[in-house]
Image (cartoon, rainbow, N blue to C red; front, side, top):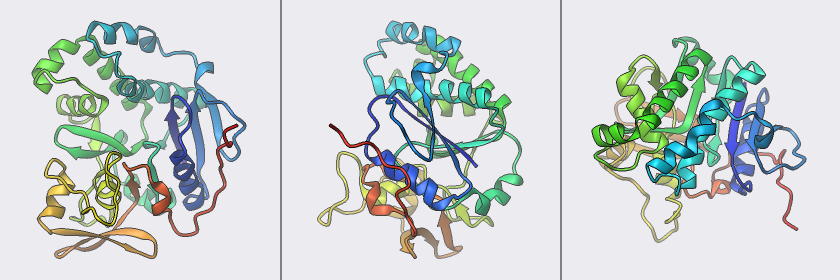
Length: 296
């Protein structure tokens, strides 16, 4: 399976664990890394961000952001830009299907073990939902470039009409890519589909948008330590279930499992580790195939 990752700026240490978890778990993986931090990397297909022709909309991106005082947040800009760059790469490389997630994700299941689930689904864009207002790249699967093209078109429309969408859909609070994707889903219910995140239903596989990883590892500001309770919040769909004790989170054979008193055990395909301490959650048979160059 094709995996497409994106990072702008100096590559952080945690991406090393993210990439090695893919290489360790999915022996049939082909990893594309879009980045402007060019080095000689083994076991991955590096695409220099500066060598890619900028998608037409990206050329005008900063102007729209400046008009709405959003250019001051580089993380917000980068998170949104990647959607267009990944779409451009997918067309350039002829990727009819691929997986994308954030660089602080650990993978536990190869695509061959979960492809039966996706084969039953319609062509489209699949992603994990944090709550009813935010879709998160904890895990996403794209098997329709036509759908991805339409999503880019919708993102472009929202940015070009930013003030309207900020007022009507976000209570005059700044929009980010998570909220924008959620707005697109609300306006185009057949364009974006959510992956299962709770242990209810016949399918025994579930995906982590961020909540399970934050529960086990804490947040970036407050990573999990022995004197801190596990992180769960009512703001997340999963957090509500954990707080209510309808589900529990555990590890079995170095793999995370989610238990429901009614449904039994479900296997997590991934963990989204917001604390960035991915080294604490590596899968079994983890091997370092990919190493970042040491700093001079």
